[in-house]
Image (tube, rainbow, N blue to C red):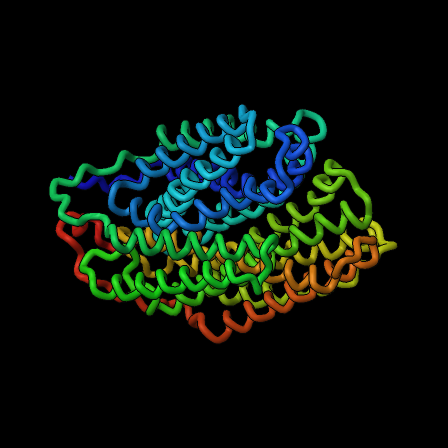
Amino acid sequence: MYRNSRGRPGAVLAAAAVAQFVVALDMSVVNVALPAIRTALDFEPLNLSWVVHAYALTFGGLLLLGGRACDLYGRRRMFVLGLTVFALCSLAGGLAHAPWQLIAARAGQGVGAAAAAPAALAMLTTTFPEGPRRVRALGVWSAVNAAGGALGVLAGGLLTEYAGWRWVMLINLPIVAVALALALAAVPADAERAARRERLDVPGAVLATGGVGLLVLGVVRTDALGWTSPTTWATLAAATGLLVAFVVVESRTTTPLLRLGLLRSRWVAGANVLVFLAAAGQFTAFYFVSLYMQQVLGMSAAATGTAFLPFSLGLIAGTVLATRLTAIRTPRASLVPGALLAASGLAWFALISPDGSFLTDVLGPSLVTSVGAGLVLAPVAAAATTGIARREAGTASGLMNSSRQLGGSIGLAALATVAAHRTGTASGPAALNDGYALGLALAAAVFVLAAVVAVAVLPGRRAATPVPQSPAPAQNQMEGTPS
């Protein structure tokens, strides 16, 4: 019999938030430690970037599969399994003594995160019914997610400078332990289904994982190969072919990895485009502002991390305000002004100068950009899960997380290439400043585009058209009511 218990909502929210915090933290905490890692493990310069790319590749490539697995095998089960894998690989990375060991550990972290992240969001959408309670829960989740990414820069700088680079990996262990304890105590055990007639879509899983993985690989390697490299074009062409095949297969199978009918919902489709664009702008802001402070202003790793505190506080303030707005109005009421405010902050950032300082060139734009980004993050999560049935909560969550990861990877790679072209072969502060300023200006344009999408695609009324449903398999009919 299906257990309809939603557990203890407050503790479920805490478990999901802590898990999302550590996943977001791990995407940025390593970046500041890369110079120390290179020295300690004797990395070849061209291989060092794989410490970042290995995580992005497995995380981005497996998110759709992880989301569908949550629906088929249980959200709590996948949450616990994913976090356990993540913790073990974090320990392995912290104990690594050779480059290949650290790269393998980072890839394993991505595998664990690809299971845990969609499970965390799916637990929220099935615990909190649509309406103000879900909006508030997603607001907390979004604030913690944003804070994890921003605080990762702070934690990476402080840990590297005062405790050693290994702690950027080992710091994950106590955080994961808290999330696991909360989940095991508060989240109801997954129901044992008597009729397991629905199976995982293996062809779809292979095509989606291969297509998204090759897409991420092709994009992130442009830092070394460039966009015009035959290898880059071949990789992207192969990714496109696999993703086209994935769409064909999903349109014909009765148990798809991603039911294409989900994308007929303006809420789901619009929110995924928005989160793609917002991630592209936000990741780019982190990247260029961090480089500006270290390579132009000459700030240390610890000082750079500390300088991101106002950004973290602004993100939290923005998500709190967005939660209140979305609870009484539509998500669009927060998304449009938030995207435009973030664009304004990034345009302000684009005025950075080689002779600037934190107070004159960073603090003000940080606050404006972060509040605007916060106004976008909470409602976009609510929009992406509007009208979703319980049995597809994991799929919708995996889709949104995949859009976020792809947006961050593709947006950052594209804008970093443009900035590098502007900088050219020069390495002085003035040349670097020009490149970073151009990248930040283009990130502002990305957020303007996000505002346009919010106006053009998302419904203007609170009442959402239910996502078109296909007949539920027998084992899922027990939990087929919309959450």
